[in-house]
Image: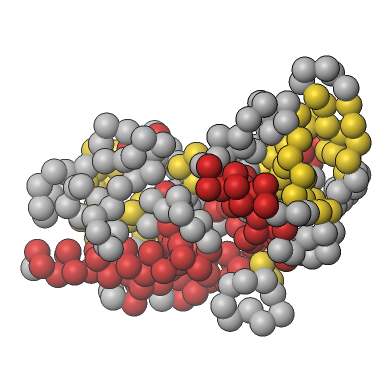
Length: 312
């Protein structure tokens, strides 16, 4: 017999835990399956200085544990597990069927999806080892810690250009490494980069290795045309080659854009199917901040509460 759930939350992180807090307080008896990375992307971040309510800052894992404890205090049933199959109803008031870990069957009256997105990295051993030690995928999250220092940004699109110009206001020098002989960023963003005096762009250049034992001390860059290698002394490396929303499970089930982000209606968190809602980075490719994810988590719980209330 499938377990019957009033409100199922798929995925954790700021969006999922905030949705859980609001859903539990609304007596929706939420059940959360955290996914394989309990707490989401923030658990890979060491210091968090820009989330309201932490005047002295905190670290990502500690903050996620705080949110988890708060959700559990109101009665959220937090479980470790991965949703592996979904059969969402197209009818208002219909039952949504979800399979967890390929064996546990659930039937939910409402579903909140907060599976997040995963930052794309280069895949270098040295890069992976130094994530949190100077390697980051979010300039607006971590740029402050490199005030007055030299940093590298890897990427060629609008995200890379935006991160570089943001960092240029804080850092001493920003070097953008572009794999091809041109940037893919919009002309407006390229003009902004070119007008910023402390930004240098190196074309046909890739990272061969991130240098440093426990913290970043530099990068070894390689020109992919000549093979020439150059050591660049920096304390921060920002990878800006994009994010991949964790939505493979929902392909051909829910509406999503060309890059896989779930599409929600207007200012709501409603997907194209009744009783299914999306919150956080899984539907937000613009802001991708913990505080905005938490805000949409609140919205999703309120949307779900109103949806269920209208059925009674």
